[in-house]
Image (cartoon, rainbow, N blue to C red; front, side, top):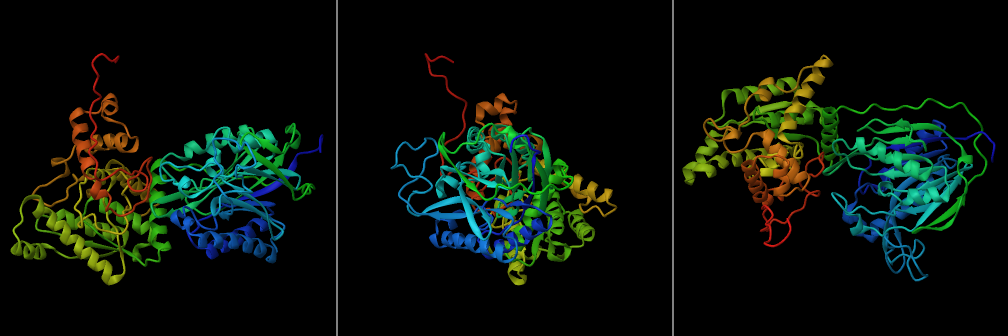
Length: 611
């Protein structure tokens, strides 16, 4: 094919929102989006990582019945695509594979003898994070993820066996290599092997969770791998919420030169279709067999290029601003948690403060005002403006609102048992929690708890009181960012000629739990600017005491915050799940023992040792 015009190919990336465990529903989603891709004239469509099972399936992977069902769903999907007239479209879809054999396949060393297991001879009952290319009613090739992340929210080394083969499929004269997600993050990994083998195109199904500014990392990463592979890369990422994780999509197509050819919008399902012109002469040789620690296999579906056609312009979605990106992540995470679990509505306590106001605005954006129920629960210490601000919020957002004074109930408790100090203050919070849970039970609402990351970090909450609830929308949002989000959401509404959802007074007044006369948060906590800065370094970045001081934090503030954070671990272990947006969220991302005597101290210089 030398001295010929570049080979054309129209590809689609199906950025979809799947449901974990819903093999039938996810298969329907693939067929629907594949039909859209075919209607758009695509020759190849790529779906995200583990599309059929949803991601992450966690311990469902360990059930052989689930893995077998995934395999059956894959074969059934291939046949169904052909039966519905889509057999001529190449479809790359992620799934859970279950293979037979005798042992694991290590990543760090290449096999050295025939006894070493391979993709054809893994350990018995080996689960695989897999992707398959479907065409003509058949499963043409299967690829098993090579690099299994085992950090942060990922536990893939717990579940999966890594693959050792890199399949390359010739489709319409174009050599296409399959990889999966983490394979892109490893220099010299499958993309490097693909580059040595000689290929034209890399497909990369992904389930890459959102965190702040992660989209700034992805494009340079994909550009590096495209250069390493010497090929264009189709990076197709999942979208949607799954428990504490939210996936933002941000799918993209990058040329071998690093040029961004197309990019999908964040936080929405989207079919991104791109016309490629592939110069096959730029690949000097095409190899198969052992390359490094992988075996390259080649499969031919078709040598004949597609007939020449007029390419369409591609779209490059503009990145979202920081606050809008976080807001949309929180909205999507909340919406999918409620809808995917079949819950009709939510209820939350409205104190007139900034946290409950932002949670209410998020809930209205996620679910609609008719599915959000706010309850004012004033005590004898509640200020007049607290109830007024809660009512103002309800008017602004249109949510369902009622008020239940708690003073008579608190008085009844206090008449039965003598309480003072913090115990008496917390009683008010627990009465509120009990009432909200009762309303949740009575009407079928899910109770939202409104604590932010700063409060969760230092234990500034009451167990079985304000911490009660089934989901915590701003659990991973520092207090200072809560204010930023409120101001951004109001400005966004004003730009669109809409009512600002968050009352100005809720933003401007000093934060207070109002559990005692004149109480404000600054009575017992450092300023939130100082607190959040220390939390970001201690919790998110795992810095020790000496490093915190080197970064210029006030020593007294550091000592106080670390003591509070360490002592609150038992509270956090009982807290509701909430959407992850930071580098390290409480929950599945940050796991520390509750019973733990380690405390951060300055390093001691041993006498006689060099400093």
